[in-house]
Length: 90
Image (tube, rainbow, N blue to C red; front, side, top):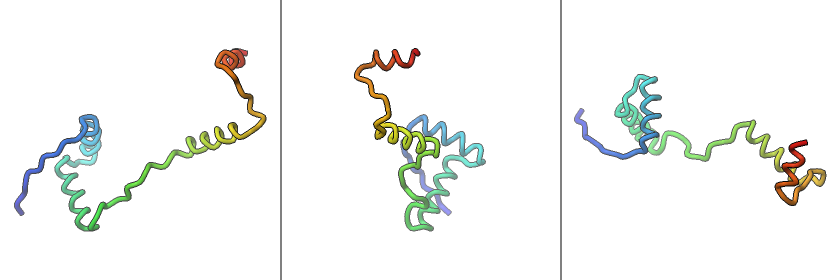
């Protein structure tokens, strides 16, 4: 099987993180790219979903709590930061 050289640019921090992860898996960057391309051909498209990451349960709960506090008429409101900081110092 003949091979061809390909050049591509990636962010240096991404390269560092990916290389460390691949080394832990016993793969080189070249092997990982070849693996990805083989899967791309086999799937006739990307071999994974491309979607926004889901939030952790903790973050989702915090967002819901913030929404509930915002909607509640019992939540104390402040007109300026000094008033808020005075309450926090109590």
